[in-house]
Amino acid sequence: MNFKFVNLSELSASLFEEHPIWASYYEPDDIDAITNWGINRNEVVEKLERIGYSDDYIFPMLSIDNEYPFKFEYYKASFELPSGEMLSGYMVGTKARAIGIFTDKEHYVLNINLKESALDDEKNILKDIGSNAKVMFPLIIRVNSLGLKVSSEFDPNN
Image (cartoon, rainbow, N blue to C red; front, side):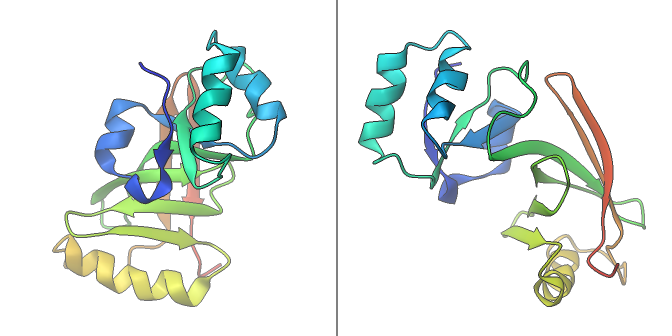
């Protein structure tokens, strides 16, 4: 995989098919973590300069040897609704405080701390996927990427 930066506005299911874990630059120590994967330091700095060291961009995490070295990480995830229906998307960090869900029509970002917004999105997501289900929470989250295995739950009602 070619090391690159992608704007967060370009998050998509296909991006997570390309690579299962992405992270965003947050502090200068992140450069060291990236170069530990064998990426040339000058290449990393040059690409960071091109994007103005912005945290609006993400890059592929080529290894998770260091335990979660970045402030913001995005893990490819699948979500199981209580009805058994499956959705695809990503989990932000390993605590499942925020998730992203892709439907054919939209990219939804749900935050456990923004209950009203998540419950509003629930209706739209169920409509987008053509579900007859009345509820989608609690969602069972499954992540299995680069050796990281997480099974968690996302429920803004609790």
